[in-house]
Amino acid sequence: MKINPSTRKKNLLYPMAAAVVLAACQQQQQQRLGGVPLPPPGVQPEEPVVKPQEKEESTRPQRLGGRMKQMMPGVRQQPLPGKKRASR
Amino acid sequence: MRDTLQLTLCLTHDCTLRCAYCYAGRKYAHAMTREVAELGMETGLVEALRTGRGVDVSFFGGEPLLEWDLLRHCHAYMERRAAELGVAVRYGITTNGTLLDRERLAWMAERDYLVGLSVDGSPEMHNVNRCYADGQGSHAAVAAALALMQEFPTLRSRGICVVNPANHHLLCEGVEWLHAHYNGVVGLNFDYWSEWSDAQFDSLSRQLDALQVMMLESYRAGNPIREENIEGKIWSALRDAEQACTHCTIGEQELAVSVDGHFFPCSRMVGVGDDPQITFGNVYSGIDRARQAWFIATRGNATPECRLCELRHRCLNTCGCTNYAGTGSINRVSPFLCNLEQKLIEMADDLAETLCQEANPAFIQRFYCC
Image (cartoon, rainbow over all chains, first blue to last red; front, side, top):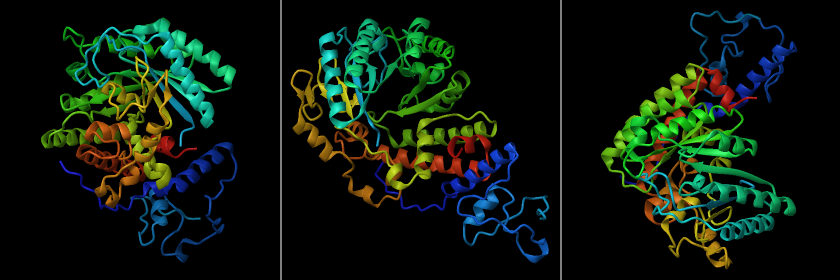
């Protein structure tokens, strides 16, 4: 065995997901309390009505993975398999 | 940085067991005197006051429960003196479990002790190393102690499972047994004092791969396996680099008092005897400040290769006692530590990445919420 310094630079998503997950937790708590969910920190509230056909890709997260991918520039967000995109 | 002084009192050299890997030195009937214990506690209190810290008192051995009366005397003494001096104190003990009973557990639960129980997993894994003097395995006794501990839901506890070259091939079944019989957190203590061959390390890596799968499935089942090393590596990615690195405070925030009253900078070093490189004073002469300054100036990691490593902020490379065990120097990393830490970080990242992408509720609850 030798000392073998690591040169790997992995693009890990989970360390960056903290803010997103925190927001999801807050949203869940708000919903449990019957209140209006707050946007995650640093995220502007979305417009109330956006027609689906106006955009190629919805920017609204479908799931945690979607929101995480949204945070990563250049990573295309995929809808959940077998699930229609949410219309608003 | 922790805001407490870790004060360890080694109450006796004696032990009910003769574990093959024990680093705490030769076993014989020799206990700490009350005078040495009190002087050791006074030194700890003065040091805590001087640096504005609280004190975590930890009873260690040998088997500290062999000196139950002395332990209770130390507790009463510390309570009285800490109250007089206005120092916050918490207590803990590391035990092999063979002398635990309901009365002692109730006493410790009432006083908010953290009980570290040494249990190497399944009977097969445990009995490889943890035997009585006659060679008989001690698993039955420790399993009974573990069951008793579950009767005290408020008792703070952790399981300590040592992994060494002789038992590592049973690691997964050991963790599985612990998960089935103990609902607390377990720390895998890898044996850095032993020589690990390349083949043994490869075999350990395969066990860790299998453990990663077990942990993933346990999260998916909503009943996670809690293991301190892996959780620590996940935390190290979630915090920024400065916070992530567990900086060793050897010589500064740890004071271990041997049975004879010598001061060591870490409880894991007491077993090396009176190596002048490692001791720094005693209860009669006080802390040797020149030696203490040497520890503080020398600690860290002086291994040149590590400067290039991307993982150095998430690695145990600054741990003085681990380095000393592996290389004989408090600031030099052993090849085993390097390879093991990389393996653990890789495991932790793979596990956390998968669970995060799955939005696993138990994982989110543990590491992000709320």
